[in-house]
Image (cartoon, rainbow, N blue to C red; front, side):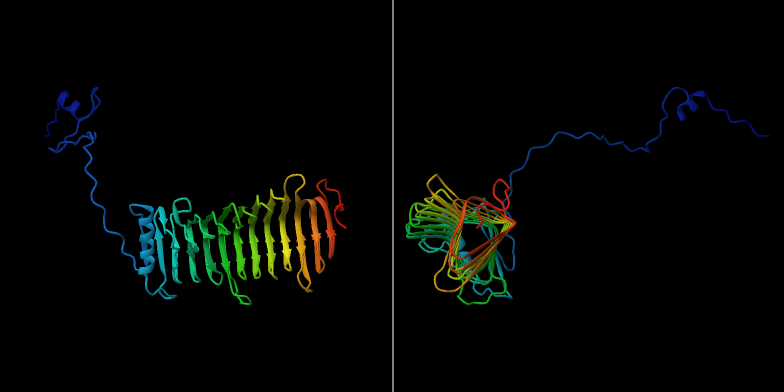
Length: 391
């Protein structure tokens, strides 16, 4: 016969919470750690910097004790790359800082690419009579500022042949040339066949001087496409936003502004059989005795969804589109879905030109001069159609 197991009430209460207390469980003899964090200890001293990254074809240039020291470090880095090629291209990365080249510009070889930390952070500058930076074919410049601070007859920030060069997120500044000041000068070879040409994307270029000719961009026999950019020439005898002498120049979503020339201001000028294309662009000549949006001399143009404007004080000569011809060749200009503004004349035609204006707004003066001008579906600032300015 089995005997019943009798447990005391105290034992039962220790095994269950039924007697008003919480159940307790053995910890197996181990102490349960606390979850609270103690006070933070003192911070140790910063250790020495580690070694620079070892890249096969990348060189990093750091700023020195002064801007001139930084410029000398950049020059030595460029000169130290001996044999760049298509199979062995190099990238030079410039840390934030000012790299002053002094009175001598920089002439890198092809297949060397340059990248800064941003146009507002990395600046390469000089007071050189030659361009601050001469960028050859098979190269690229991005995320930095190139500046020429003038003092010589010529002040040019960036110069490049146009066969194979790219620039983006770039700022070019030139000031104080005694005879000629240009933020960017792009050159090519007359008659050269270039499938694509150079490209400038999201570039800001500005030239300013008190004398001589001033241009945001000069394109000489080049093939060049500008996208999402702004170009401004300010002051001097003649202020031009963009100038094309021969070659082919395209402006896409780009602004060209000539401002406060002592004699004239031009948004865009094209001459010597240049071909000009404007798409969603603005060409403005402002605040000069003669201000013109686009001036063509023996050149052709195609304008779509753009604004051409010449503006100034009362008594100033202002035109949206001005044409002239040298020789006996004929030239064609097409303007579609655009706005043309000129108080003196909206358009001045010339013998040898055929100008077609369609679906556009003509504000201000009249269409005058020689040649043939045809308006189709155009209107004035009061949306009166056909535009009274049209012949």
